Image (cartoon, rainbow, N blue to C red; front, top):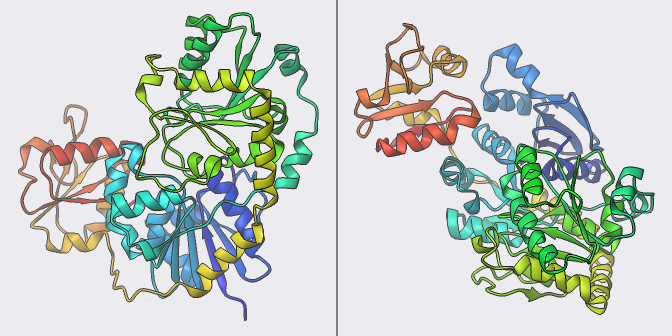
Length: 484
């Protein structure tokens, strides 16, 4: 009889984790009954197999917290193993743990993100998982050394990659507008969200250094992506007088074709997990230049899995160039990235060697071994003898005073759900001026001593979690509770 396996992810569109989750469902579908539990099913970009379940609809129908709804769905479909991707889903998977095997997949190095709330929750919840699957050895290193997870409970399984599909798509023509912009010039390409993590500001400034010293080389730069920094990056391109040399393209534009014909793919990220786009570059024979961030590039470019050391100079690896991940490259005090781009431009033999080694790597990239790693995790990971209770609200049982930080929709939802079991003394808000009288008192955080005996429930949306968490830490609050 087949086991019932749930794959829990936010959606099947948009990012690398979502792509891997969809691909994993396809790979596991022959052996298991697969249930894909998503919070959004409006747009499906990635292939999948199994039963698609929208948990948000269930939450709204029943008026449940996310992890409560997830527990209900696990029971409804008699789930034997629940695999989750990305932190909110990982937290809910653990919070809803019952008799099923709970596996969480960590997709990114956490410590460089500088998100205290996420670190707090990782330390609090991840030890309750039966097993943790990291996508790279650098992510595993981070979880063990910076978050206290046990080495034998964290296993690394690299990402699946559709090599033949990528190569087929790479053989198509570039869009006409892109061909017109490039002309017959050589170019570099960067692919990734226009967000601080990807550090396109460093790339643009380093490209400016390259152009200033080689004004007649005709080389161009294409940045493919969308995100909140698009306007800032466009302004920087204009300010540096690079409008004729640098172009930002949306995700809807050509991708693999761009990689195939580029001098190199350049990754300037501050942190990663195992960047899929590096594997995609390998698949089409595109040399790679990457910042030696935590984590991923050093493993892929040079088979180096020792993250206890840092490179202080550019390192020519087997399949690309690793550049020190230093702030001085952001303001042009150093030029590691510019030097690497110049080297690739001028050394045809080195480019050829990189491409040869990339092809060898991809030819030996064993998808069956990755699948067997997942199957082994499902079949052989021992279950923990845990007594979860409700890992979040159990801390409220011992609190002398309980508050909810936030008097909006989220805060009131929590209040209505908890008022029958706990006495909630007040809503805490940062500014009382715009808040009307409520069912319980409205106070500011400074009006109460939160350092002793108090538990504060964070009753705001995700995007405000860091702000509120940092505020409570500054007030020496010892019990900070997250319910969503």
